[in-house]
Length: 305
Image (tube, rainbow, N blue to C red; front, side, top):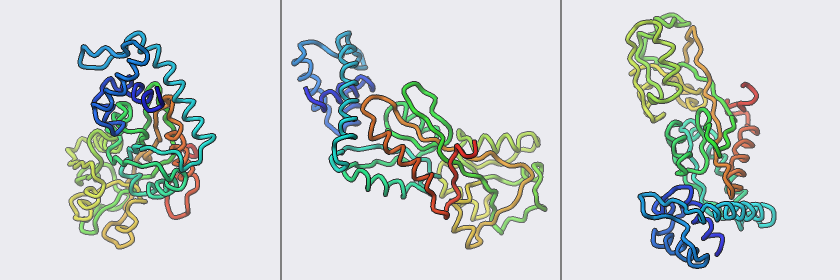
C-alpha cells in the first residue's frame, strides 16, 4: 500500500471509471487495474463492484475512502510544509477562458514555474460554460471562468473583472453618439458564444427594441476580433485584448447610451483532500491579479463587487 495506489483508488471512487482514472493519472488501464487488485489482495476484500458500467464502491470500499482521503490530505500537507518546492511534482490541468489567456495567463505560468519547477501544466482554453462542466467532472483541476461554480466540494472565488467597450471598424458608418439602443439593434453584432453571459447580456439589451438584430456568435476571440476588423459587425470586448487594434486604428471605440455589465471572473477548484498544490496555484493567480503592473486594466473583483 503506497500513496500512488491510494491516489488511484480515490480517483476511481470520484470518477467511477478505471478508464477515466487511467487518463487522469497518465497511466495505462492495465496499470490502474493492477494497482487496485494489489490493494484488494493486501486488504483481502473487494473495494469495487464491477458488475455494472461504473465502478461502484462496496461497503468496505466506502470505509477505505474515508481513510484514504485523510492520508492523501496529510501527504499533501507534509509536502507543502517540509519538502522543497522542486520535490513537488505532477501535472495540473488549467481550464482558462480565452480572455484570461489574452491577458495575465503568461505571468501566472511564469510564477508557477518559479514556485514549483517540477510541476507540469496542461492548458485547456474554452468557454466558461464548458470549463464549469469540465471542472465538476474532474477533467481539469482549476478553472478561470466567467461566473461561479456553485457545487459541493468546490471552492469558487471572484478575483478579477473587465469592462466591455464597444468597438467598430472605421469602414462602418455609425449614427451620432451615444448610439441609442434602437439604432444599435439595427447593426450586426459579433459576440461571445450563445450560451455565454456576454451573449445573454447583449441579447437582453437589444430585445426590447423589437428589431430582429443580427447577432453572430463565436467561441474564438480572435475570430470575433477578425470579423469586427473586417467590418462584418460591431463588438463589445475588453479593452485589454484590443490594445494593438485600437493603437493601429483598425478598430475604434464608440459610445452607446446603455452600458453592459462587466465580465466578472472567478477561480474555481476542488476542495477535496490532497488538493494542496492546486489551492496554492489558485492563490498564485489571486496574487498575480493583485500585483498588476500598470499596463493592464483588470481589477480585483472584490474591489468592485
